[in-house]
Length: 151
Image (cartoon, rainbow, N blue to C red; front, side):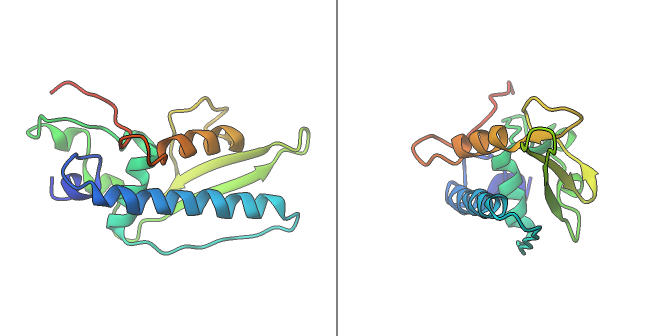
């Protein structure tokens, strides 16, 4: 509850959403720049556990956008020790398909594959789909994306 309220999809700390939106927008811009460059590249970024929690919640990774008002059962769905344990890392790996020159994306949280709510082939997503999905979620004109769940 201590992390869910200020850093997750809670309605109580709206200002955190702007930080998460900026981080995801930066991710999109850096990915596009790296994809446009034919040379292999790596981009490393440091972000605190609270920042990565907000960012992953906005991205909807592993259903971290789970919302509820039933706080007595919140821990069954949204446990911070499973989301961002100490020394958390989120790896977003890009691959260029030799057959179609299409860019594919795979996400790993602490070296374990994680999912987005998108169509995938073996948890490998098309960058065009991921970019469109993330761009829609960071649109400032829209409210913070939420999955409405019954209490």
